[in-house]
Amino acid sequence: MPIQHTVRYRMVTAATMAALALTGGFLPMCNSVAIASAQVLHASPAATAQTELSTEMRTLWGQHMDGTWAVVVAFADDPLALPPRLDRLLRNQVDIGNAFAPYYGQEVARQLTSLLTIHILQAVPVLTAARLGYQPALDTVVAQWHANARDIADFLAAINPNWSQQDMREAMSIHIDQTVAYAAAVIGGRHSDGTAKFDEAKAHMMDFADTLSQGIITQFPDKF
Image (cartoon, rainbow, N blue to C red; front, top):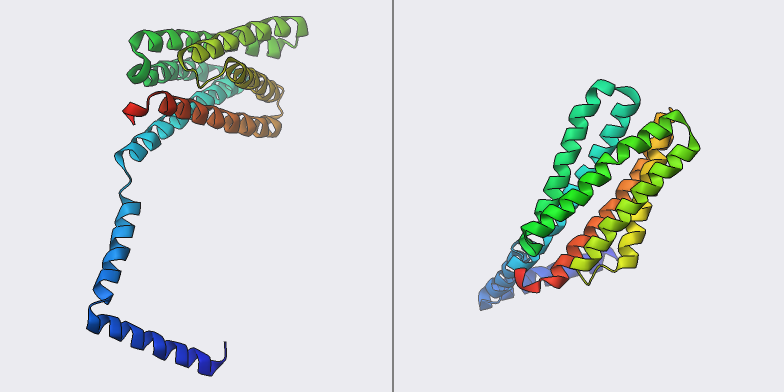
């Protein structure tokens, strides 16, 4: 913009602001800006409740992933750390089950916790078989792990029509395959590869957490 046009623009702007101040037009304009800012800062209770659920699901399933990683690393490199890390991971399954209680009741929470506890306990035979390097044994325990994953998927699909059985099964199957992949890498001493595979697995689990929270929000609109 030419200099003279810039100067002229500033003069017009200043004159306009002065006119608004004199006519009282400036104050309503400021009020409008303040109201708009307040609307952004103070979200509706429904939006807040939805955000809280989404955050809770991401936090809990993130802990599920981080706890599993900690167990894998301890199994591979620090056996003394394995029991406390496994205990912490098992507590996380209780936390996940409890997060479903406000919507589905205590019995559903208990059943989900039970399925997830099996999911964690079945990880140890998988890690053991991976360390031994005996493929038939590994195939057997991984197949059992997939069976439990299908049980979890079917359970979730049964309590919420927004979670299709096919989608839940696919998501849980991917979770198993990704966990086996990064665990095998860590146990084999390929830590960089294991870390990269874990990052992919955690991103997948965050998508899964979002699917769960959105399904609950859709199923129970009165709670949000």
